[in-house]
Image (cartoon, rainbow, N blue to C red):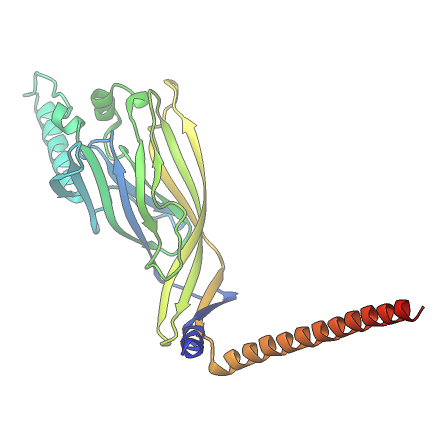
Length: 300
């Protein structure tokens, strides 16, 4: 019975074969799954921007991107699309410009967010669909007018982009996949700066035993942090700069056949018989040598 169970387990075990080929995909989009938390960057000022080598530059991406307001205990207290907040900011800005040109605004408008919003945790998650070319996306305050940002934060050195990456992937996950940036935590204390993650994406196809094909991507990453000083003319951000490999990796699941099991069993049994035969010959020669020596001693 134990033999049958072990044979069944061996036959059910799946092997993965890795193959490489040139990537011929063209005209497809690249899905980027984001799930990040910013404990010190309020929802009202954070934005997701993207730019690629084709020259496409998008600010305040609003396609399938959500922002959650969390309290200090991690409970959700508000949900908004990025586009809703951006539209609200642009509407306010245009209204203020109109008042300025009409000469009716004698009192300057104060751009700020309340203390409750400042103490809230910002969670950004969703899916970006970008072109399948090298580029970058980043989370920052770049959607704000530089003068508005200056009035809100009092300078770039006061923008804290501390973050936690819960999930960052470029497609669906397959068995055994590990994304190197998952559960990454970068917290800044009494300083500010820009984080840059350099990502190398490898197109991947995972072929199940059922012949189902899962197109996805795996990646490697290196990171760099640039501290901010008062003379810098840029604003802190978290950048993800990605490039695609021209090689596609195909991972095929294969189940070990019964013939493979028989071959391995024959090899094990053959090795066992060979070893026992050698031990038997050695023991025979040893006993024979001992008995011969004893007989000669008794005869003398």
